[in-house]
Image (tube, rainbow, N blue to C red; front, side, top):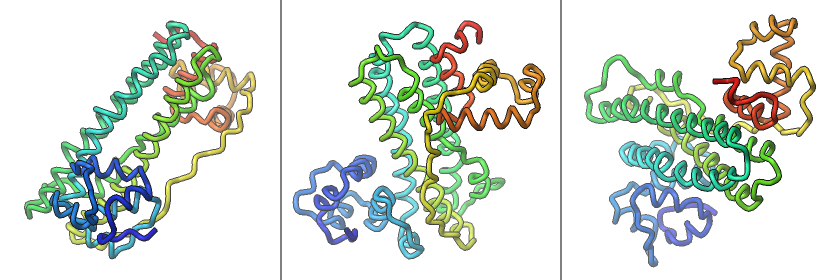
Length: 309
């Protein structure tokens, strides 16, 4: 379906229910009647081209330079700020209670390990969004006001823009692979469904910042934008292979916080061998971060939480 501002808003939502998230974050109440996209956007003082551009991203459509140039940066900032609030005060909050119910049959050590991992991830998001709220967005606003903040540029943001999906992906893999069978299957599916949805949404959020906001700010800075339309990177296949004994030994040392050289010295192997084992561990488990691997090791009974205190 080709999106345009003359189509009915209700038809647009019918084409992809995920677009309702954009409607909510832009403050549209969802009562569309027979109004067109243009009419609804006008009612809420939103640039319809910006709205349709966001809808295109959420529907997997590529962004053209022409679409980009019609976008309102003010409305884009409004959307990004609202997204931050949604992730921290709604999406993550909704996972917590269901996760607690899912983990209820497990041991206190397992509940604490996953609970700590989840809390650390939330702290990571808080820090990530605080950087954008306190530095990036005020800088963009200063450009719009014609009084650019000195000592910062959009290139600096690109250099410091971290991946906020990696730890969430690790949590998803832990829930799918490492919880004991006594955990309720329906609750597991509910948690996984929420995590998958949040991970997908965060992917769209990152794309909007990297491929829409950044080029637009480059325009404001007087640079020609580099319109990038590459899709999200594919996740590595999870082969569900068992870890070898040596890989389990390396995993335990990773959980203890040892660096590659320290692991090599402790196990009397080369650093290159340690790196190879770590790559294999990530490939087999689908878990990339050290905190995620630590939780995996605890749930797999390879190490006790108390030994990490």
